[in-house]
Length: 326
Image 1 (cartoon, rainbow, N blue to C red):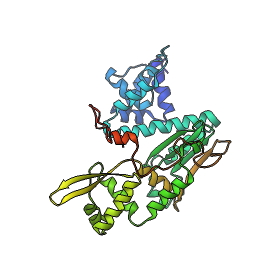
Image 2 (cartoon, helix red, strand yellow; image 1 turned 90 degrees about the vertical axis):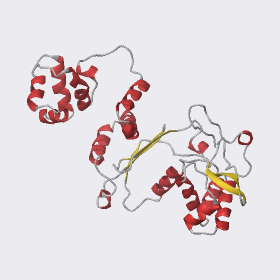
Image 3 (spheres, rainbow, N blue to C red; image 1 turned 180 degrees about the vertical axis):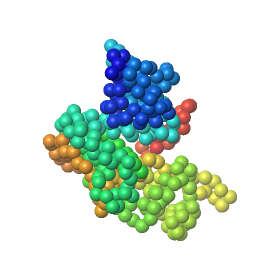
Image 4 (cartoon, rainbow, N blue to C red; image 1 turned 90 degrees about the horizontal axis):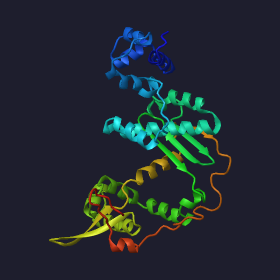
């Protein structure tokens, strides 16, 4: 073994990553003999150092045993890490980083990181189709006294939820029971959910009752009634345009991203036959206390008239991006 720190670290971190010299050479498009030379005192080409560090799961500073007295700024690290990957892969990389945070929090709380790590490695290459014949859990649920963490580990559907508990408890971020019953009663009516789902296929493009009627195979009059009701409940935004035949009501989404998480977590609550969850119960106190919506700043589902802010101006456009307040 060489007394060269770089050579020692290449060998050390290669073994820690579970790689053979041949494996590392394949990742870097060099021969096994080249890797062997590096570990015996040679040095890789400078241009290979970024790829070498990435393959070993470390930084270039770690390769050379360099430590800085200046603390690492997490925001700077995350920005560099996300900019390092292609734009179309940034959501996946953000998911991977968030999953690492869950592992660290569990480790700090109860020291079960090794068990969790082994579980994650066991599941990382599987997908939900395989779970039709496999009992392996695809969902992870962690509950601590500080909050909730959930994740889907299936390679064909991934998400991470990290929800710190508010000072007044989780009930304080909910509506009251009557408001939820009103929402569920509304969506239970024929074609209301289908209409709201169709609105999401339109994104920010306004549409009319005629288009909805054709989509869900109902009369234009029934479609207009449905859209008007969804608008009254502030799930859609109602507008009007002039046509040769007179004024025409149009409808646009108020919130364009909440429905998918809402429906997905509803499906998770319903527990599919082949849906399995790994639960890590670190929490020692009840998940909720008191009544649903207790201490909430906005316990009621506001419908009907828009508030003063929206009366003053429904949409706020910035100079640089098409942001809107709905």
